[in-house]
Every structure is written in C-alpha cells, then in structure tokens.
Length: 164
Image (cartoon, rainbow, N blue to C red; front, side, top):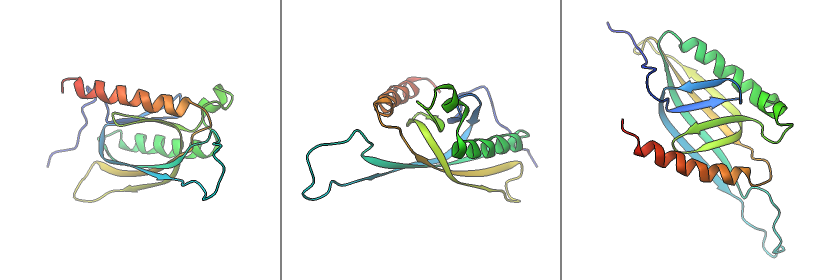
C-alpha cells in the first residue's frame, strides 16, 4: 500500500496566519463564503454609518497529508485559540488589524475568528487528516477591508495567469 505525500514545491491552496506564523494548507478541497446582508430599516434615516453592510462566514475544508499532518493540526488549533483572544498581529498594530489572515486565490481576509473546527480521519485514507474550519469575518470599521477585497481580485487574476 502506498503512502500519502505532499509536494511542497508548489504554492499552497491557502495560507492561514496570525500575522507571524503561517500555516500552509496544501490541499484545500472546498471553500465557501457565505455573505449575509443586513437590510435597512423601513422608514430609517438616509445617513449611513461606516460599518460593514454584511456578515461573512468562510468554511474551508482541507486535507492535511504526510508526516507533518499532526504538526499542521496543532498549528491550526493554536491559531483557532489565538483568533479568540487576540493575535500577535493585533498586538503589533495596536489593534488596527486583528484576528487571523486567510490568503487564497478567491479572497484575502483579515480579522477572522474561528467559530468551529472539525478534524476527522478514516481507515480508508491513512496518513491524512480532514479539517473543516468555519471562520467569521469580523472586519473593523474603515477602508482596509474594502482595500483587501480589491487586492484579492488582483491576486486571483495573477493566480489564474500563472502556469500550473
């Protein structure tokens, strides 16, 4: 029977980081971004506050493969805990940016907090761990979140243009 392996010579599917420690996710099998938009109150004022107009939840499923899978699992657990109590990046920027950072070809998001993580394994797929992360996007008021959304379009275009 063959063993699972990961080729670390290519770009990972996603990177999750607290601003200092990056955790590459080499085999992302599925990612969904759920955006829930808040509707204005009927008869409300026309003035708008500078707050996010929608709530985002990102669900990411990845496969941790090879001998390092338990190290990556531990790193993800530590990042999940850090997302709840404050990351190193939030301390370095005096709270201007906080939470976790997710970089993929589809999106770049800061200010993520892990709502839940599921880790599963099976006898049929030895030497792998399936990980599902459910993260809430909690952007701070201001233009940084919009700027990163625009930057993610450029990153996605660059990724599509690169040869495989």
